[in-house]
Length: 502
Ligand SMILES: Nc1ncnc2c1ncn2[C@@H]1O[C@H](COP(=O)(O)OP(=O)(O)OP(=O)(O)O)[C@@H](O)[C@H]1O
Ligand SMILES: [Mg+2]
Image (cartoon, rainbow, N blue to C red):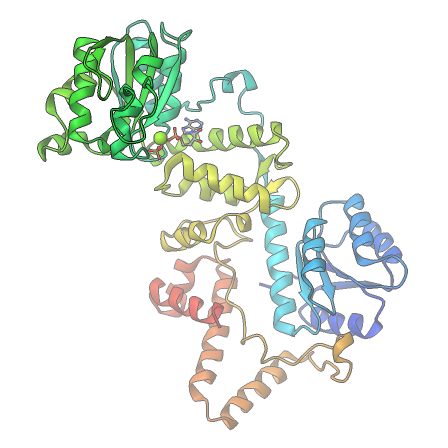
């Protein structure tokens, strides 16, 4: 997707690099300006407002990294691609750390340069369409640490309020990552026992032979290794609240003892002979289908009834996706307060994708995606490119239309990289670039393939060029492009994958 109006600045003290880059970019209708040093580059950038800057890493006078820092001071509207003759880990890391958009090692080929410019322009278009999240809510509204204006979550909050004044056992169910632990804590905070202890116990992570002793304690000498008498959670938590997480993973034997503790209000230590009175409130949670476990006799029916005196079902994130912008806002604010990110905004496309995605891992997955995006993002905005591939792939598969100027997947590249003529660079002084006339180049390449009797590759080159044009014309809309090309969307996607993966 060539964008006629885009302006590119090349900063390099090697005139040959400037010359050949200018020829390639100029022939693709980009406006090109040049600078022969870092200092001059900073001046030209502030005067010309380029969209993308190619910046040499090693220059006489002001170094590339220094220039990069000055450029950041000029404006954050352009994206900088660092160029270097040597691909070392250190320079690559430094360049990205100082906020370069990307990094390219000389000698590079035409295709590589064009792809980079296109992806920089896409990222820029994406960023320019950014909408700020903040401030959706006052930070006061986030004090509870639970976000949810949607109807299903409002129901949950109402239920918490309704049971706040009673001491009933609560069963929280919901898929993994829906916030069961968070809600359990909120129930406790709003309960009559909020001044007492709150102890979470995860039944799935404590080994079976230890869970009884963990919950009910043991007498000295009751089993090998029991060198001292020890109190269990029920005793420690007297007058408090125990959160029994993953209760569906508990053995039948332990279930019996829990039932007794609930019914009789007493427990017995492992190896102990006399019952001990306890006063605890139980909140239990599971992502398993307890009804089914009861049917399969894996879970005691009487305990099941005893537990779900009050029951809170947490909705899947997809069932309350109108909460997603607020959740993202909340997560960004929290990360910002912890000093972990400068990111404050999300581009329109990234936001569309975040809101539409299916989130099998629910809020936890969203949290992971946002944390990761904040680490990768350059500047203060999460862009589409900062979201994991699985999300963008999902968008393509599910025909989620992202606004023009960006496509969920990068546009189909032209002929394979590496087969192109090299552009001149310091380590490649001998070969002068001859690209300019695209058509001649293209036929040269096809003729070479014919010489190699590689007819299949010839068809592929032609097809991928047709696909590229169709996608460009439809602004990345695969449904439209596939209709035009007379192929199914699945076939089109397969072709795109083949070409992108080389
Ligand atoms: N409504 C919400 N508002 C803000 N953050 C939330 C919300 N729901 C969940 N989270 C966050 O998502 C993450 C997962 O929540 P939590 O651990 O409570 O889920 P869970 O249902 O217990 O998951 P699992 O079944 O895997 O244990 C936590 O970091 C939590 O802070
Ligand atoms: Mg949990």
